[in-house]
Length: 416
Image (tube, rainbow, N blue to C red; front, side, top):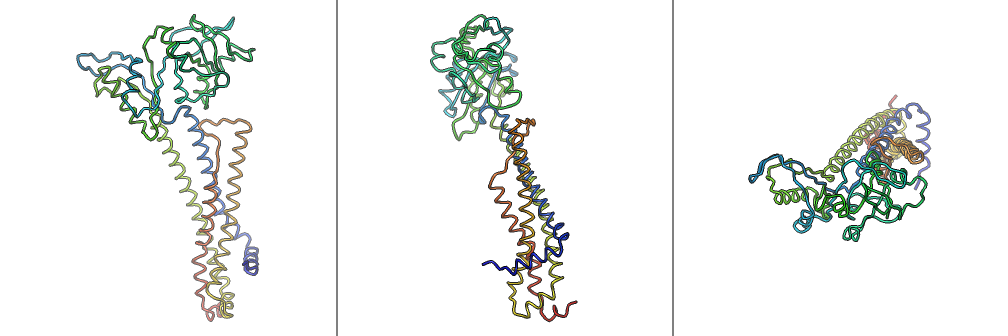
């Protein structure tokens, strides 16, 4: 049941001391405002950094380098060449691996031609498994498939920059033939890279052809340049990384202690490092904001002590007329909750409004801000902040309210 008299008393008290109440409430307002803005900005940073990971977040990439340790009569400094047999061995001997995607790149100086247009592009020999490692938006046609690999078909999937340069006036390049280093390939699909930054720019210049076709056509028979792997669900990427390296060291007679023979990139480990950094930023944001809110609470508590002192005689009259200690406590706590709750709500709305405005501007005008992505506030944070306000409001008024409840009516009536 709503007690109108209590609300009228709170309104009268606040109205009587407008400046004092406003300055006191500002600390709570600023704390909640900072909390929302900092967490929203942290989310933007998280979105921006994670969007840079335009490959599977548990992928492992592996390539060969030169050996650095002599082993079994073989000198250091020799080059290792991975083969199709290595790919088969990984699939057969390491059950923790879910996907293996071998890849080759066409090296040397060459141009890709279509009619009277030509330019230099990156040409990669891939398998269908690439889409599990590096998601692409296949806009028209299809990607390389198993039949292409088996029959070594001369087909190609091209990126947006290739279309822009070679087919500026063609609406549908599917079925057209392009010449790659003297061999003709039929376009069966087009794609858009996913992500942002320099990687997307480079990916837009790529032409994908079947891995086996590149091996046969360009004198790379049975050669694998590098490979990407994805572990099965629940298996750490480090397990796959270590087991694959151990297997390949054994197959290519590399010393177990040779740390330079194979190069690897563990995306899962890098992503976890980034997540740890983001969690640290979020914790710092909470720490700073909670500290500010706590300072505001102390201010509210001090003001409520002053209010109790100013109303000592009034409280004595109330108790003389039969007011219970709880009625006195509830009045002071309610007033404290109103001040902190209202100030915090305004801070919550202001912070949310700022984040929403930034989000709208970045989406509407496609604003790019480096590693900073689109910010956001989730519902759980808003609810947590609101509950925090109610709790802190009650806490701020608890000590003054307890002091008010202990006022002796005789002493209070004699108080000047």
